[in-house]
Length: 460
Ligand SMILES: C[S@@+](CC[C@H](N)C(=O)[O-])C[C@H]1O[C@@H](n2cnc3c(N)ncnc32)[C@H](O)[C@@H]1O
Image (cartoon, rainbow, N blue to C red):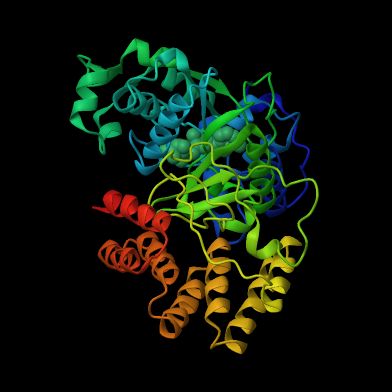
């Protein structure tokens, strides 16, 4: 298709209006949004797109984007000019640890079905190939036939590049040279070609995350164990982000994981997931469906059981009535956190929880802030408030409550544990380690001590 085959439906409108309409269409068709300050980027990108199409300028390109039915060429050009195709091998390696842990647990459970991983917005293939290489090297018992890796993108040119599997040295800027040597063959032109067996392990396919079919058997996007959708949703408009996340969630098995970039992880968008924070990534574990009968309002905020994780380590079985683990900064493996459960929850906390359950997060947090000040000398409330604030991704409020809690109860093991979580997530590891050591000393509960030990090992 060439641009000149199209009529210009917006002829007669001022250029700015045509650009506005084009931006709206692009967002509707691809999710890529350019509101506010990003709008100038859009206009500039359309200028470059116009050059590529041989059109006289941004307004003409906008008209081209508005003309006729939307097709793959429109999508591909948008992907090329409106997103940054920045990627490299072994990016944000903590997410690869998550896949390995998940794979080991999958094997330990003796699951007959293959492990299913999806790199959504895979760009030129570095991400899915990194997953394949990592599993080969670190979970050798998982045979290639026991894992399927789907890699999709909006940009067909990126997918062709990925299928070709030839990369310049720059793609390996964060790689272990041993991986380069083990999985790539140097070519005469200075590039490196991926091992054909590894290449065969990844299935590349075109899929538009804004309008495409998923979950769907047709696109092979059902029953995924882990979905990587990193550095993609940051380009989407809020409504498209919400829809994409809900649909990605539907693609996951219960206990499966959605991995996004830390900057994309506004937790209110991730309803039905439990967040796990890291410095460079946030993982969201899909919760099991809500039980059919609602829990009595009086106990729901305090004792709601977490989703059974798909890979709870055998050494750390869930306790009888555990609190949901809000954000393990230590590892993808969720460590159950057992907190004392109040027989009757504080009425203020019950109100906060009810607001959150109704999807009114901001009001819930405001109500929580008031309760935290009104009951400044109640250690149980400060603890529950810290936990709730963490669950909602408000670390500042959580830290405030924990300071209060540790002032009121300097020997609170849970207080030290939660404070360590925040410090670790903020990258302050020495402080996190010191809090954890204190927690280990103070904890009466053997399970909590075990969790602390595991976490300290991972932090060392
Ligand atoms: C910055 S790259 C991210 C690559 C990789 N996930 C990573 O983190 O290294 C963003 C990718 O998202 C793709 N993309 C943008 N909009 C998309 C959409 N609507 N559907 C699928 N992929 C999309 C782009 O084509 C691009 O390859």
